[in-house]
Image 1 (cartoon, one colour):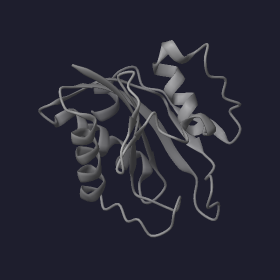
Image 2 (cartoon, helix red, strand yellow):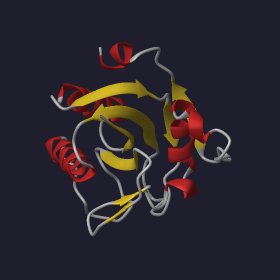
Image 3 (tube, rainbow, N blue to C red):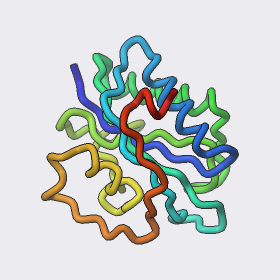
Image 4 (cartoon, rainbow, N blue to C red):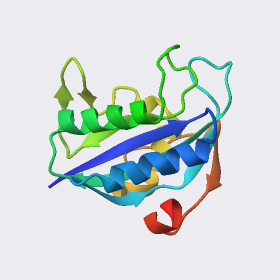
Length: 160
């Protein structure tokens, strides 16, 4: 089994519901087991700043899929939840990014792992370090523009 960490974010519509639906769809996939979820964080937009704040989180999952197959599932979930790619780093109903896949380095046209900008983004690092204990000594996010929004005690508590 492979271990992967995904970043999820939303700033359009019911942000919380979008995250919940995305995690539920991941967990319902027959080849994915969501093992843990981070707290939810409200974050200031980065890059294109003329937009609403995001809710962000990270999930850890187990899967027997390849990283590219997992990417396909993530993009299918984004499409199902009406993700539109109109402005780079712009508003979105949902965004799913593969941050880590085992301890592999992957560089293809479609996928780069570790995610190339994850170490520059506190909205990714803070929830990642929360559930990836092995990164605690390696990563020191500043928490600028990132605010704890809500913590859940379990996956079941989160997705209902």
